[in-house]
Length: 338
Image (cartoon, rainbow, N blue to C red; front, side, top):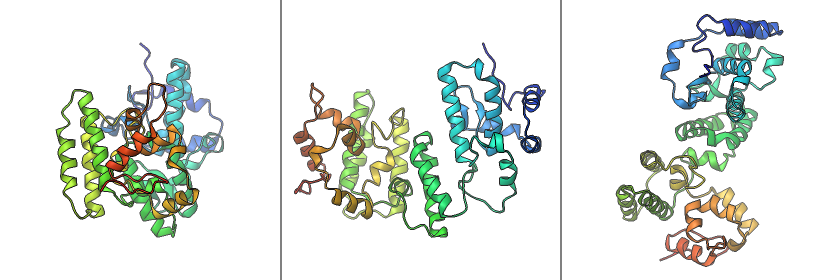
């Protein structure tokens, strides 16, 4: 069995010194020599803080560790299968971007040391020291990065990122909050009819897996008796509860928020006014939405339920289900069931 070496088990630092010997940039060498590692934290890190989580190898919990893991990984690429090599390379690259350490740092160097010297940096993920922002330009870049990479972040980190993004946007005067970030920050509106319907979809999915869907059924029933929509704080707690239930029933992987709308999509399911106006101006008829667009809006399970043997979507059946569930249909004159 191949043993991979990283900063966790390079006890005599033989691999590290081999890496240093191959580097030419004096500034980068100095930055690496200045890094102080706390070996005790690695055992406490969650799986998602490793570029190779199955083996808990190549930690990326800080800018310094991501930098080291990149160097250790490059030294040992030939030991990995092609599929595993691509996976690790992608995860390390993702975290280097989140830490504002692009690949060019290995040629340009100095970025780690300079970042450490900045005063009171603001991180959108402060515990992991991810996504440093100092103004609206950084926030725009962070939003773009979040849009590309959010599926690689666990739900709690998406929420933390989004909440801190909204706070920083207020500080720096950024007026426009992307819809996805507003959702995870609990800023979007809620249609409880849609939430109840998506809870019913979860109950059906759990039932098909042989599980007990009673909690989802009871929760949907309770929401049906609420006359006034709860405030954002209570709705955020509801989304957190649904996420916990989804994890318990195995609904959170591997296609969470693609096959099944995630807990925050389930609760904060109404696009902000700007998005609604844009959608209204575009006037895309319901029956002209592609299957991919329908899956993105309503979830793969629902679309599969109204898909015929020929793979075609029964739009009449889908529209009827959505109306009975109180979900608005683009281009439809009906607002849903009474």
